[in-house]
Amino acid sequence: MGRPVKEKSLTQQDVINAAIACLDQEGEAALGVNRVARELGIKPPAIYKHLDGNVALRRAVALTIWQQYIEWSRQQTNGLEDPQALLRAGGRATRDFARSYPNRYRVMTQFQLNLQDPETAPLIQEVFHFLKRVLQSYNLSETKLIDAMRMVNAAITGFIAIEQAGLMTLERSTDASYEVMIDALVVAIQHIQKVDS
Image 1 (tube, rainbow, N blue to C red):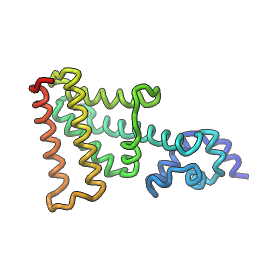
Image 2 (tube, one colour):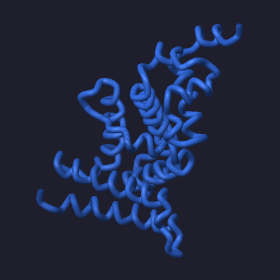
Image 3 (cartoon, rainbow, N blue to C red):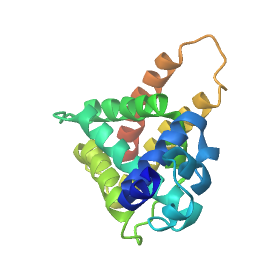
Image 4 (tube, one colour):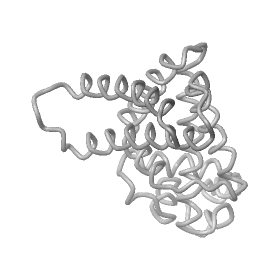
């Protein structure tokens, strides 16, 4: 008689938490209604009361991970005001999150955020607000601000993707190379400020 009670008391957040647990343990292939139902000890139809299939499950998981990542980054950069210190701390926080939760990071970065989507727009605004804090002292025009944001995002996510794929095989420490890249981003942002759009 325990199972029906559990199914009745099940919440959407329970389903998402179970899906993230499966993701952490087994990777992206575990993000399916059937696998998550087994994790919860229930039948798959019980999940459909909360999320309409695998696509909805993956979306809910990605949104939750984005929220976790933003909170993680906020904690790592709390109290910092200097733009260079913020950029360095934010870059390190992103890499630390990716190292601590590699499967979550991959799901998060493969999910497209859209300003027209009422669920994802606040997440974009949070990321945009952080990058604006980092770049505000450079007094960049709107177009240069977008260029700088894209450059920072591409460099950090690109480095992490290559590192996670095991493609950094030369002897030099990847930690040292990452720090050099962050320093280079600071210089590049200063250069963007001087270049005509």
